[in-house]
Length: 538
Image (cartoon, rainbow, N blue to C red; front, side):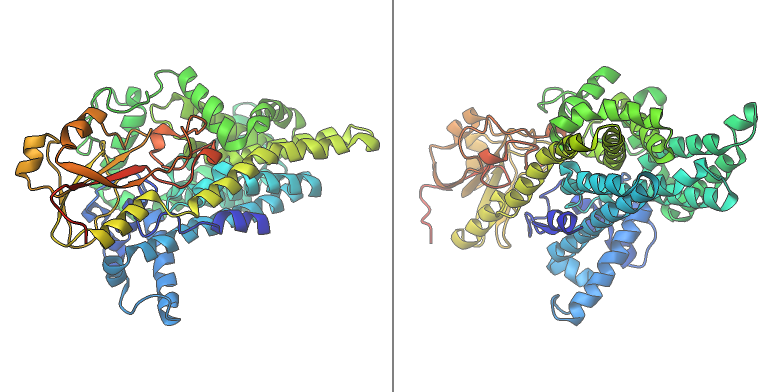
């Protein structure tokens, strides 16, 4: 537990006060304004973004509002209400929202150990807890104000409470499983896949014969209660047509074959071909190659990558309910993710508890078949499973604890650029995640980066950000054309060396690597600041 808490709360303030350190955190942050203003209608939010469920947004607001009240009472927050703090110091609220994810991450490890001990024994509980506690995928998402860590918590609870259904099914147990699955869905919609292992547990526990065994009464109860819990905790989705259409538009984007002729009012903007440096998968094979060859390889470690298929086979062979539930959920999730056009390493995070259960159970089963004098081999295998992700998690926390390059650039601009200066920002592709925030008093300029256009706009300073990620790209030829009237006065290089050993997750646009931490000095893109030559720095 101590390890889990250390890895998830260490560096929790990464990148602050910059609000765009992790893409989409600012969306969740600003959506909490809606309930804080006394409204239940998330369609009024300026972002009009339907990805995050209303239940998650309302929970985030409740957590942040409670923490805001307590912190203000002890003098840690400035006086004023929630909305006032959002206006003056939004980064404080964002830090509190991140603490919700970190707390959910720690609780997930604790509950996983409880359920694993009940179903598989004390040794399996310890191994499963170590795997989840050290998981780089889980540590990475437990630092973000996004619903992934809460989804993992929902997965752990659902898998734990559904296992007894395979032994002694009852109305109460089925209802509890349904509520657990429904609440997990209310945090993030892909939790609907938990209905697959829930159904499998109901079938295992059914004493009926024929077709009634395939559709047991307990499965019907699970489905009904999951629907009640999900809809009851998601009022905006239930009553707001605009929110429903936005959610459907995301589903249509991810699985276009399901909606070949659909037309939604909230389609995402089209991205011109060649703008981004990665390609979406065109087949199930491409998706599986990404999740196994990249996300699982760097997020869980090479040993886990090798152990997953072996432990999956053990899960179905063992006839242990929680192992079978984990196997069904993990396999179903990977197949669905692989068939999707949208790929992100964080999408694999919810199956980490399932992987931990299967590997832990397989190792303990192996130990039981070895002579006592050779059981140390199993302990060694367990250490090998956690070694690489633990190293990555520690390296990640150490890296994000360093000041982000965007924050350093903002501080330099605040100290060296006079009020009223006109600053041209270069490098943003599609989104502005790589930009440092301009201090108050400076005027941002966005014009075509041509010398005559820049001169006509009265640009005094140029801030250019560049990175191997698609969201920060500066064409050297553009800089060469603009530089003659300007001179380089400040530069931040986050890489130590060429950066060839670093591995980033291109679709995520997150300026922290998945691997190769030794070649990175700090998070963020390379930033160069140019000053017009006839301006003197104060």
